[in-house]
Amino acid sequence: MVPSPSTPATTRVRILDASRRIFNQRGYAATTQAEIAAAVGISQGNLTYHFPTKRDLVARLEEEARERIRARRAALRPEAVAADYVEHLLFAMSLTRDYRFLLRDRAQFGDGRDALEPDPEMAADFEELRELLRRIEKDGLFRRDLQVDLEVLTRSLWIVSRYWPDYLRESEGLARVGWADQERGIQHHFAVLLPYLTASARREFEAALLVAAGRLAVEDEPE
Image (cartoon, rainbow, N blue to C red; front, side, top):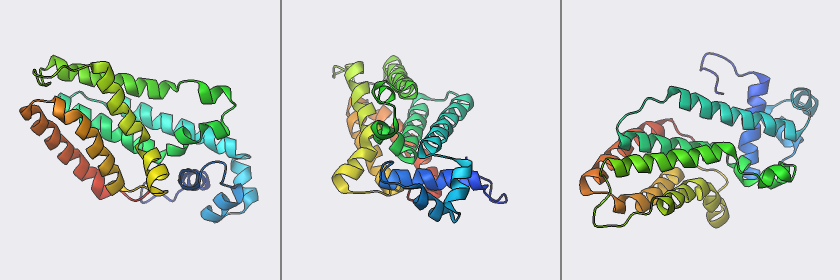
């Protein structure tokens, strides 16, 4: 939740924003409540008044991410498949970046059972991607000279988007992820998808990406 420019952020919002940012950069286990309080500019006692434990912070951030997903789904208005595909991709990668610690560190803050159970939102995201690829197939946008296995292609594309922040951290040592880093991930995603499309479909998808990505790049700050 981001307050409007004219509305000062409440203490709870500032705590959550700082927690998410520090958890993303340093990891859940390595982050202390004292660090979060210092980043917000409040005492640790004030922090624990709002959120007694780090796990309480995680629970609220998990719900915040789900609220963002529900709001996006409620606002969806189907368009051409290229525009819908790009919207799905950019939202998924943005959410994965903004809440990457929730995916990466689940074994640290889960109760053991939670860490092993499939996340229902991730399952829904995978199914939405699969349905978009079915629409591409139905619209005749795949090349006829290639054999397309939709299940394999769905998994390949989803893995690129889902694990891109993990790659940046583990292989490039990046704790802060900005638009340029996200753009590279999108390029890798399209490197998997575009060879399967007809020439006219490739142009359509590239144009849709150019329009949508231009808006995001203007608004983006390193996270």
